[in-house]
Length: 341
Image (cartoon, one colour):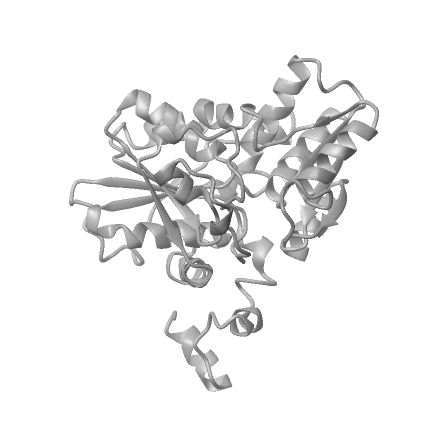
């Protein structure tokens, strides 16, 4: 019999799915690593479980303890699943930029959620980084996971995501394309793949308003690069410790609008109902298409599920309010749906 002992045993081994329509103009094969097949509907399940296991092993997380984390939603979901199975409490701190669905989903799996303002500096006492750190000091028998600087984050991808992609492509992968946030997914996966074949190109996709691209290119942390952006789940206003920039070959920035439109195209043209960052990942690839050749095999990591963005990217009103949909009348909306605009 194949009966899993608990939900955590279903994490990982997600499918690699060929893209057919959107990438038609590219000379090569493009496959998506679709990580919304994880039980928490995102790639963050992998590192959430790993961070909990490492914290247990190091004695930082004790029976009956409380997990504290700053999260845009997906890491929180993975941690909440681990907490349910292992008997921990969860307190998550998030920003008011995140979709209401994400907050409601975290509450549904038993977590307490505190919402903080987005547009404050990381060191501001109101920022979600600062609030999470303070709670960890104040609450007895608690541990702040800190996905940004906790190297168990990238270790999870070195141990699972990288090997899965290598095996699924028979070692023929030539390019990995991934949005860059905490740095765990791209760095851990890249470290494994580069060990297997140092010629594999690693392309990081960033958003305008994040300082990561300039930091990668110049080594300078320039706060003038930082301004508010709407894209969720990637881009940073500081450089997390999970980064090892030496394993990344290129950074490419994508606009909020282009990422959102591409996410909608993924759903309508490929049947892949993904989150905001998946659209941005694919948009970044399309911007770099001039660097691709016929025999290349590109793997794009699609992080999470579209159900977390139904009030935003997949909401015509929200898109129109931000000028992301070029529509003037109700008739335009109907025809834009028909033509997969």
